[in-house]
Length: 330
Ligand code: KG4
Ligand code: ZN
Image 1 (cartoon, rainbow, N blue to C red):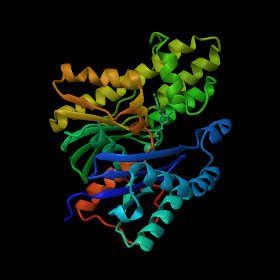
Image 2: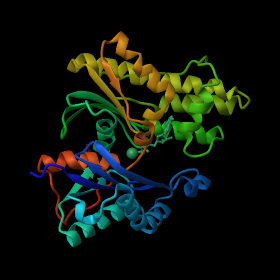
Image 3: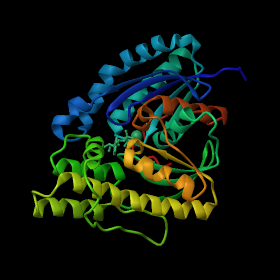
């Protein structure tokens, strides 16, 4: 095998068109992210058809910019990796079709990447020393999973949400209390000004599954019944309740699989309060806690290139029949 492997990563599963060039799975040469947040803001959430159209318009220029910033040409690329699920089908199809066309035209191997595995891999970029096995807490707009990362391409799901994903709960609460999409970062900011002094329900199951709809509904009801309720305190209490549940199940998972490394991943892992609470487990549980740098928490193609690299070296290579799978499981 050639010494250095350069991967071109392509991400288009939701509202970010992103292309990245990554060397040997860990060294980012470029990571261009064209976010559509401003376009979707006025609708209060992502409109799938609008997302697809914008991916089509952006993908070629974003790719060109990623190659230029990395100082490479298509000839230098060894592997083309793209997200093929889970996500919005029309949005995914743009990246998949573009990656297949590149793979065919350039005669380079194609690797389909699971978006959730991409979020996990963001940690490999930020923490060059991190290697499996570890426990990963994936908290994004669409997913909430506790996963035992046994190896780079071997995963066991220990728990998942039975209703809302954590980011979804943040965004829904934010919308009702009058904050712009995406609400997670705005709640993060408001919560810092408040006190978590409002009691909210916490839901647990016999296994390590999660449920966040009870917390979300309690917050929404409080807001409707007492419109002048202090928003800062409400946000702080909401964030605390969500984090309590995440920390409790993570602690149980640490004991269950007897692991000494925990990584956070996904958009919500950018949350300051959640990061701090998890960091405190280092001392109380005698473990090491990791999270990606902020730009790698939310959707980006560098994490897809990294996961694509590890799939490639394991021989998980796709062909031109690769298709978008909107409900792809980890
Ligand atoms: O990983 P991501 O970009 O997309 C999915 O794969 O779903 O995550 C986006 C989610 C949104 O729900 C957004 O509100 C949330 O991550 N998010 C945050 C923060 N930054 C982004 N939630 C809480 N605090 C933040 N600082
Ligand atoms: Zn994501």
